[in-house]
Image 1 (cartoon, rainbow, N blue to C red):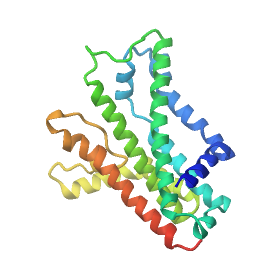
Image 2: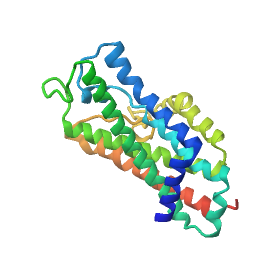
Image 3: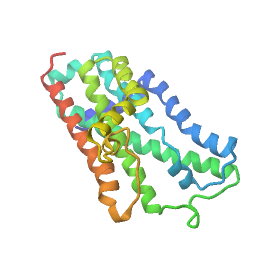
Image 4: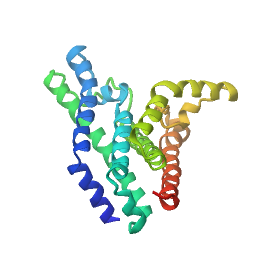
Length: 247
């Protein structure tokens, strides 16, 4: 396992493609604070700003996961997996780095928002009087984002080992993210009826809602259990493909 983790880390710091990729997360993270604090002159706290704006984490993890996994096919490294590497460790290493990327991204998002908050004179991390959520609920929300991002990365990993081409996976996932998902959600909700919302149980449609009287069904189930299940399922199928498919 350690050997596989070291190899993936080597790719992250040595691959020219992945080094260029790091420009994308920085640009994505800068969008919201620049719009809010610089252009719109926002005065909200850092926590309130992050809580009210949609994170660009999902887009970043899609590109990161595809590049990290597909690089093994373009470099020919995947052939070594079939001869000597532990195929389960190969998949687990990817999932670990997906989760680490999500955490680092969300921490960087907080730090950059805090920086713009400070230089524009707001100097407010959390406003106990006006912010309509607790610090605990904010961190729980952040944790569910990281879990959802990890599950999305695992889905992309599965598609990469299935199709082998990064551009095919990017087209499929980005089309679903920006074009197809809402139509699918509406169709499913209409068929089931009775006020059912499939978005709550999808990786791209979930949005944390804090209801401490119903915390399990509003947050724990869709925000923790569902993404963990997605990661386990797609991780398992990724392992099956790598284990039994000829290169």
